[in-house]
Image 1 (cartoon, rainbow, N blue to C red):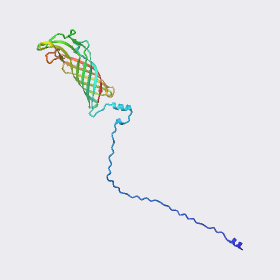
Image 2: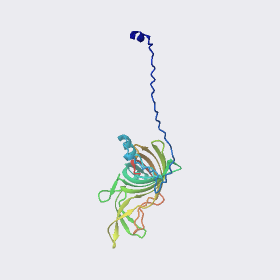
Image 3: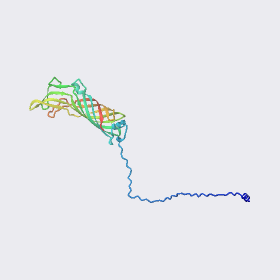
Image 4: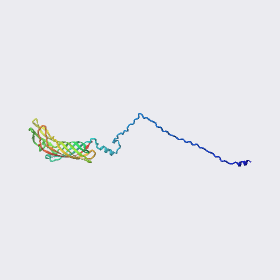
Length: 281
């Protein structure tokens, strides 16, 4: 009987429900304006320190070229020195010597200023020349063209001693210079003085025993034409032609009214000069 009851039961499937609780958390940000007050804060303007070109690490050849360039000033003034040599011919000396070319040396200083444009300038210069002798007239050694006694206007006797054409010459020059690339042609006017010296025995206490000098002092005027070539930034090679008109070559002494040369004589003096100029600034 028990067996029968067991077979009569029906199997039943149970359903199991499983629940999962999911919790999601999120973050919310709130923005709120805050008023800030700045007190006592100062901001300085940015400053740029000057940089010297010498502080930069330039190539060596570029630095050398920069340092060798002539410094142009705001006033466009430049100055420098000049030295050279040359020779001159004076028509009056040809009567006393067969050597008609007199050799000499010179030194000068100059200052220039650009006008109109940087390539055109006026240059003022001062020069001193020393000219060597091409003849020597000495009455104590040999007979000369000028031997003998001479008399002043008040009949004081003068006895010729010696004379040569070695002398100093002082020249002031104003010229216009134009620079085209490395070539600088020029033209100008000159004022100069040749200091010739002649010696005579002159009377002292009515005795002819004092050696005294008679010198030239007149100012001569002339013109010049020249050409410069710029070799480096500051160095120039100069070639110049000068010509003077000498009126009344006169050798005088303040103590005697006497002039060995006749008045109203006119002579020409021509010079050819070669030199080197250096621009200091």
